[in-house]
Length: 432
Image (cartoon, rainbow, N blue to C red; front, side, top):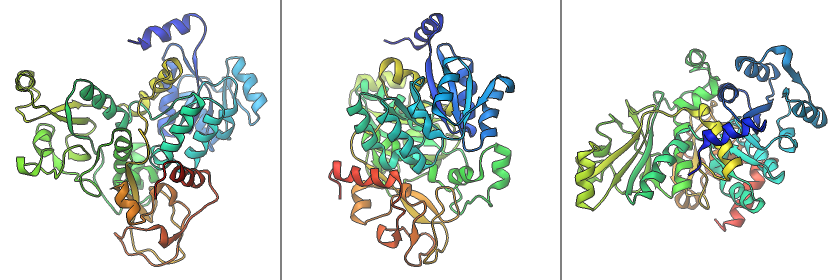
């Protein structure tokens, strides 16, 4: 078994390190820089952000003096700084995959169009990619994973994000032979389908996050994206469109996530879902077994009275754990979480308000739409619009609040890498 700490300590002793190029210095990216600063054997030599002052602040908060931070916009100059062991900021994140002194790229932008291009460029330059950008992953993750496999590099989601944390428990449960009934997360923020950047501005300021990101959390989109990522990595599916999202407690999870005939809410086992209540910030996997001895031991170990049992992790450290995904990709060629094939669950697009013909959809966490999950075969049969390619799409007709958008209702922005990858993915996996 690999010992990450010892291996990183050994790297440090030799004056070597896993070199990370970070794209996006928002809340998550800033955390990553500070976390890496206290680790052995890992460095972030370059940070890219369209707001250069934000990139500088990420370094400053990690303990680096402003006089030791260098700004550059050319590949040769950035590489020269990296070779000297210096810290560099740049406005152009698309340079990073080309840099010789970088082993792994972390995309922490949260913008689907950016994530798709960063991912593709990173793989084409034969570097590992840690895709914190779940917004892009649930649209074109399968094709990027396939391309990464062909290139001999790792495509992975991030440790610490809910999908990665759930995957950790899921792998544990499946390795021990348990049947997985449900896997899910506690939702951190109250659910408000009408949340938009203006409506949540004050809350976002208190939390230190961008208004559009807070809107994405509160309108439920982020939970849909995260659980779709789990679905695409495991084969588990939403039990109903949009998932159940019950209000419950940690202790009640095994009962709530049981079949209807057992007193629970599920029509089927093997599902993804999210829960409101005291479950957040934890993640969970509900398991069951037919073996009476195992049932006895699970009860003895206070995992529940049966027939379902709770495996629960009471925290996820999001960006603070993400460097471990970069390390595992570089040192062991391992992914934390990645799609197992074609899209299993699609994040579809729902009107947040009445929309008029000619309006342009303003993206995730905006004023126009929010996301919901559907089984991929159902979404495709109904020609539903994937959320990740909705940004910039122009409406051909009026749409009522709460209505699911179809591909026929919009003119897509086809001048983007994510659109081209999405089309290629459909051909490669022969999906309709």
